[in-house]
Image (cartoon, rainbow, N blue to C red; front, side, top):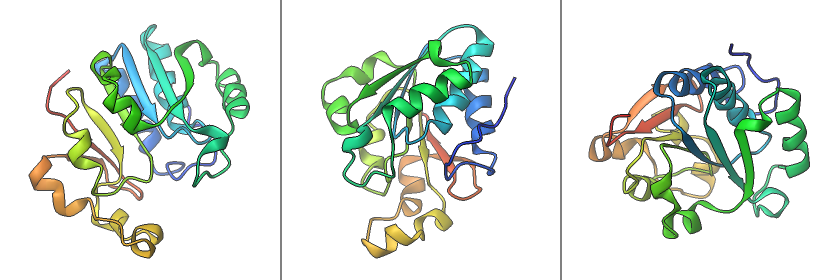
Amino acid sequence: MYKEPSLQSSYFGTGIGRTLYDYVLKHKPKVIAEFGVLNGYSTVCMAQALKEVGSGTILAYDLWEDAPFGHGQNLKAVEETLEQYGVSEFVELKRGDFLTWFKEHERHSVDLLHVDINNDGDLLPIIYQIECPVLFEGGTETRDECWWMNKFSKPKIFPLKNKYGYEILNDTYPSLSIVNKKKI
């Protein structure tokens, strides 16, 4: 059963946690890779669905305390959070970054990917190369206008919607979208 995690996250209170949970519950991926764990909110949401299904693993990657633009992510704290929500057996916390993972071909062994790493328009051409469905934070015009996208003149995501054919699953800020070249 889904229970919204009481954890600091831009997803908290938006329904995005439930969207993640429902997607995993419906499609039952065996291996999920996630990049950008922060406090574990999305990890817990997806792991609750795996627990309900009774199988599956999330490979949850972050740079943890070494993240250059970190927001206080802490490996030990996330381990404790996973225990608190009773989902630790469905999650392997790992240290790593998305581009290295992408280049090392580990991407071929996952059924679903979730990416929340300061996403901008430069990310879409990369994730479009991945064969499995890719859930990503952002994708709406509203999200493209967030403070850091404007401050650092980051390329917008929404103008690429037709080119890459992504679907917005939840348009509540900060939004959740999916590139799904292959149906699972």
